[in-house]
Length: 185
Image 1 (cartoon, one colour):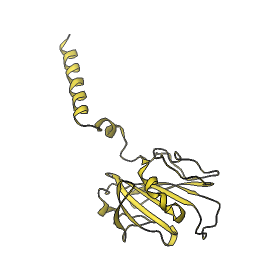
Image 2 (tube, helix red, strand yellow; image 1 turned 30 degrees about the vertical axis):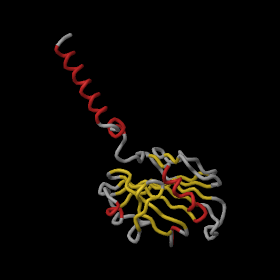
Image 3 (cartoon, one colour; image 1 turned 180 degrees about the horizontal axis):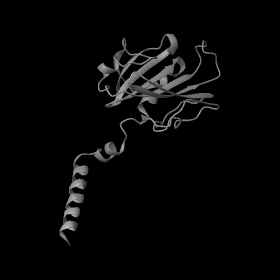
Image 4 (spheres, helix red, strand yellow; image 1 turned 90 degrees about the vertical axis):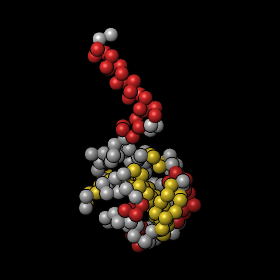
């Protein structure tokens, strides 16, 4: 074995040992810091797409009954928002309306829940939100109001620079824990 081959084998063994010693290192290195696709565009879907409607985001639990869907992409104030809005055929004012909005926000300053309260979001801020544990995650949460409509609005920092928010209308609030638990980026 040449000197170069010995060094290559030693390097490979060192890297493999480091990955075993620090679980999740390989996945973290392979995962992009911001999961929003560069070519993401706003669009409307009828019928609504399923739990894979947002590229790079998986909802392993999505309640049934949605007929309309919409991808929303927005860039402002140094952040990028990428979301999907599922809804049924009911009027916006009908309290039985099923609506679920899942949003990923890439904001370099996001590190803690306290910083989430200061995020420059246009819709759905967390200034008056309270900390809770929903679906096994520590989140900020508040009652939906105004433009969000009735229901429950929650959000958390998935990892440094990446925020996830979920707005569930009143009929979906009992399932919010299950929805939040099964969101994966």
